[in-house]
Image 1 (cartoon, rainbow over the protein chains, first blue to last red):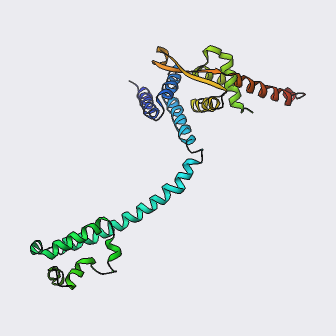
Image 2 (image 1 turned 60 degrees about the horizontal axis):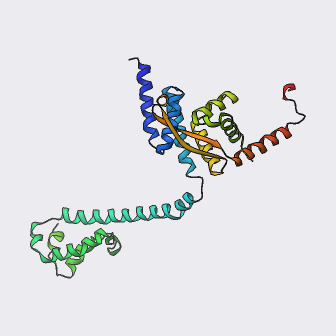
Image 3 (image 1 turned 180 degrees about the horizontal axis):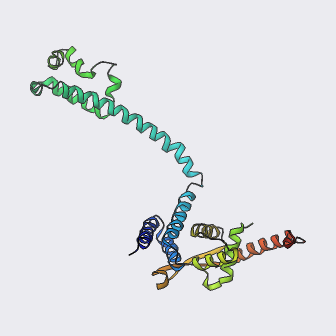
Length: 158
Length: 103
């Protein structure tokens, strides 16, 4: 099999893959037309891609996709990116506090479990950052201030 | 008013009659204009013409020559004939007393 034949077969395969982006009836009609006209592999690929691009571009002609983009997609994507960043920040702080200051005695401490139960929803809802002041080790240090939790010992001793 | 390519497509389909389908129309246009006619341009224009009610399309039979794939058959509607006639008359009127051979 010559390299040109292999290349032609490869291009036809790519054209077939691209044609899957078309409606089944249109794919049948277009691929049948191209088979009938005995075009080369590169020409078939170009024709199919041309049709796919035209179909995709046609979707952007109306006002609805643009209205959706500016009224819904962009505002929501900004909101999601802000929320995910805050969630990541809050989660990272809590994970660092728990992992870096871990002490096995904590698991016998009721204050630790209470703090964990209180802070977990905050982590999940990314509200921990807004409740904690800058530079303050979130609510774990708060637990040590009121003396109700044994968490002060492992944190203050390091 | 029709566009140039729309007119070519309607004229080719009218000329082919019962045998009007994608590949045949494409061949007619390429022979008439001596230029390539892309499948993308053909099918998007067909859709536009069908939306305007100037042509009617439906899926025809599959043949072995086409790898067992169906044809998209085309028929020009009465409205399409009117639009093509109007376009042709406009071109004829505007071309009156103009001789392109001299230029």
